Image (cartoon, rainbow, N blue to C red; front, side, top):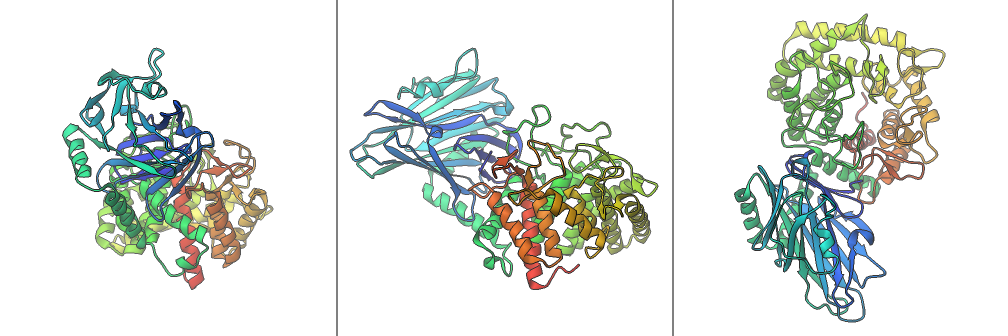
Length: 616
């Protein structure tokens, strides 16, 4: 779990549920994770007693509509309370933390605060260096440099070796309250810093500001360090908070302020969370939570073109087309010369790991970006942007979709859940919407011949799909050809236009989803019998698809119930998981960008329904 995340598109830092900084991505949002951990400890000098704060009771939150977070630590067995405030600067690449240590006893106290840093620079703990230089403790390897400093300056320090031949790390040195003062270490190097606080009378507090500046070399990191030291730290926090509050104002729309506070706050948090997953180069990763090791020691820190396209749609619909355009340019960069997208990509645009055999094509991942670009055009009406994407991206991708058809239907490929290969309703609906979107774009730009061909292919697909995927006896869409499993992803049949929302085909499909997949806690599972990380766990994503159905039907009270369920399924900080277990606990990654982007879409559609818009 990563309930607190902070990012600026280049530096992305994630903090776990114990307040330990775990992920330290640079220079891409989601790639090159230099993190191991940054944890805090406190030594009671009078009692000669030490404790790591991640063992204390913890409360975490964000400061309003911002990417400034707080973790509060309390302990019945320790006469102190600690509040950690932290953020990543919105422009410069540094992670700022402030530690307020308060005496909660009835007598004067003397404390020493410790911060232990264990970086895995370039994603391993070999050939690292940690070196003290005056009031700086730096870690580096090759062209990755992390400079740490503080105000007041640390008065204790040490560099050492961790996770190597029985050596545990400098964090162990902190537990006796005194650091060894070693100035340099290399190999599997780590460091610890200490601050002896002034005497604190009952109720008094002292604050230490700590920062980690990140760059490609020492001069770059040092310039950031000098910038921080020339300013009052509180003004930096104020600037960051104001920046993100101003960022969110673009999403303001009629009725948003009338929504229940948890829903309104979840909408804003979703916007900020999607923004954190967006790299400045345009990639949008699925999740920054590296705790999961999925499919053989792998992660969710890849850009799936489908997930990223849906996130871009949410940004477009919320008024952030200038951001989604970065993603469409990224798509233009990574699309195969033959017009299709492969399974997933790194944030740098390289081919990602996969469990799909060659050619690694999952057809909805080629279709959804075309649909997203058409949404972008509808929202922005920027023909220059549309034209720049047409020849290098939209046209080859649409032609690739046509080439993937056989007897009117897409050839077998992996389903939305990437678990089985066949011909599926979600895939067919995605390809249909991709072809229709390409045709509409082609007409805007005067390519009538291509538009007619794509429309013709879409019409044939629709006829074949209705014949082979809709089951008259069941009164609903099957998941796939020869697969009649009830699956939440069949919502795409109406959402992506394969059938009209008013159609009995759509109604029967959604009724089956609501009846068969609704859990006792109120959320919706992916499909009947789903066993991924638990038996039929509820997914906010699937629950929101059902909410979107009720919105389309103008059954708004029921839609709001489902939207509110998703807001309640979030962590106390507002971040939404991929799924929740039987007790409502988060399961798998937290956060999942797709959960948040779909929440944004559902809220926008709900507000439009309240206004009487969005009838088509």
